Length: 107
Ligand SMILES: [Zn+2]
Image 1 (cartoon, helix red, strand yellow):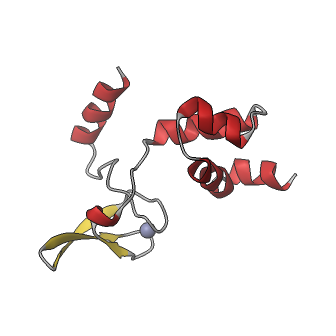
Image 2 (cartoon, helix red, strand yellow):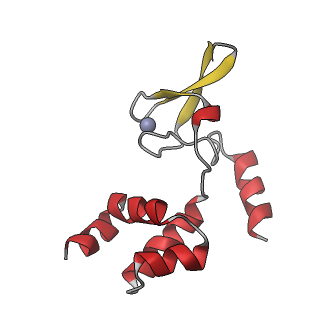
Image 3 (cartoon, helix red, strand yellow):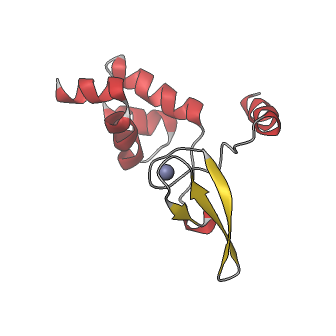
């Protein structure tokens, strides 16, 4: 099962797959003390500080890659959104941020 694989990955990896920088999407995040009683994190990639409470629902990387793959195969963003149950905005932002997908969007 995919869920079990993700848990196994999480145990091995230092960086949590679900602790993702809301600014750049990197999961290279470290604990950065507390603010107002909440644990804050610092993104080592772009130095953005955030609290996990502020983040939106985070999708696993495989889902993102699947969405981009579907797009490259010629599926429309709205079809991918429906097929994977992800919001249109999320799918669009993934494709836009992906180097491969961005090329596709511009073409
Ligand atoms: Zn970041």
